[in-house]
Every structure is written in structure tokens, then in C-alpha cells.
Length: 112
Length: 111
Image (cartoon, rainbow over all chains, first blue to last red; front, side, top):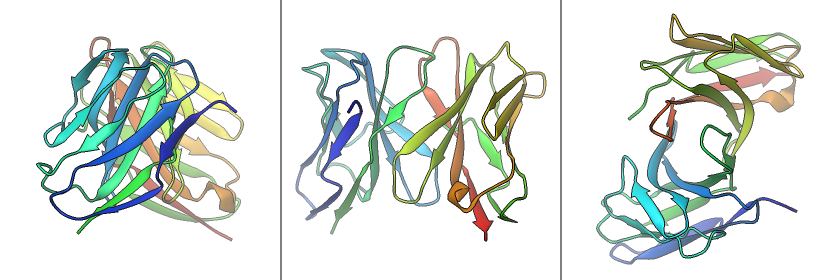
């Protein structure tokens, strides 16, 4: 099956800890994205990568970091510098610019 | 930054009725896309309409685009309980290679 996987589905962490969210795709897509979604709101872009070993900040990159060492993988680290990390995190990919995006099932992160 | 604004924020209709959702945006676009999100899940792409297109169909879905009014509408005909979800529009410009998302319309289909 082709698609995007995110793990884990639910993640709980204590305040002050860094946590890494996994995103893997086997669609052979060049571009990958990380979004944050808060209750009742739309998606806000955290980081995106259009090619391996390159990524750009989105609208809300502060407190987050990413890497893109392989085409298939785009992990997101939520650092302790992120003030309100509790949210639903969505990873997406697409083949090229102006194409539709394919989404993973999401990771719900709760920090207490 | 949010560009798309969906209207209404919430819509509740009887099964079998048609549902119409609207999206307005502010700047020129290359394309506009509609997505569906079931509660607690990832988004699913529905339709992409390019700036030189006025209407597209996919099954029970019909999307229109009016670039002069900077608006789009999504029509779901003969609604079903399974259509209950949130629907988002997203726009993409010619040069920024990012989707800009609206806050979504929550659609509830009553049996």
C-alpha cells in the first residue's frame, strides 16, 4: 500500500522534554510538510521540504525542528522551547508544486 | 497566515439534502483545493480547481471558482451520513508553493 504513516497516534510528554514525531511516505514524493491543527481551527504550516537535505520554515516554526536526510522521511522534533505544544500534528506530501497533498493520519501530542 | 475563509462555520442538514459551502480568499491564486477531514483523522483531498477553470465535478461533488470575486463553492448533492466531516479550502499562489488554509466548515448530516 502506498501512503503516509505517522507514529505514534497518541503521544504524552512532560513539560520540558523534547519529543520527535515520525513521518514516512512511500509515494516517492519530493515535497513534505508538517502542519499543526488546534481544536476548531485550520492548518498552520510549521516546516516544509521540497527536496532532500533542504527545508524551510513555515508560519509557526519557533520551537520546532526538522530534518530531511532521506526522501521518505521527515521527522519533526517539538522542543521544550515550544510554549504550547499540545495539538494535533499532521504530515503531508505531494509529488510537485501545484499538486494535491496527501496526509498521514496525524499524531495527537499532549504535554502536561 | 490564513487566506481562505469558509462560510458557514457549521452546517446541519437532513440526509438527502444538498450542502453548499463557500470559501473566500484575498490574493491571486494558481489553484484552490478542497479537503475533507473526519474527526480526529488526516485530511483527504477532494478536488483541485485551477485559476483558469470555472467548474469541476467529481461524483456528488461540484466545485465552482469565481476569480473575479475571489470565491469558491463546494456543493455536495444528495448528502449521506458518511459526509459528516469538516471541509477545508486551501489556496496556492503562483510563487509561494504553500497551501494557505481556511478554518473549515463543520458539516453534520442528520439521518
